[in-house]
Length: 107
Ligand code: FES
Image (tube, rainbow, N blue to C red; front, side, top):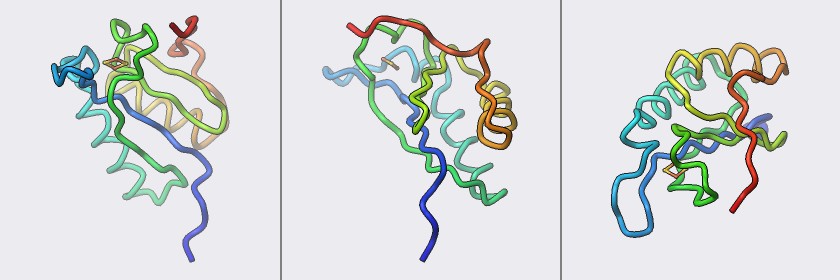
């Protein structure tokens, strides 16, 4: 049996409840999702990558946004290069990438 992943990352691909494209989608979240999945697969990383719709907590304008568990760390305004940094620092070394962390009050 395959071991449980160490990390679980949810990537907003940004569709609103009304079906309209959200900010994360229009700013390239699909490329980030696909890149994370590709690296996880190619490198056998203990990461489970999931796509999700808008988080609906007042952070859409700061996208592309993701949340990483079990730490519950929110990252925002990501690029593909930022996703690489999260892999190298957070997932491989256990160091949260502070400069990308979103701080907010959920609405
Ligand atoms: S569109 Fe991504 S958090 Fe709302």
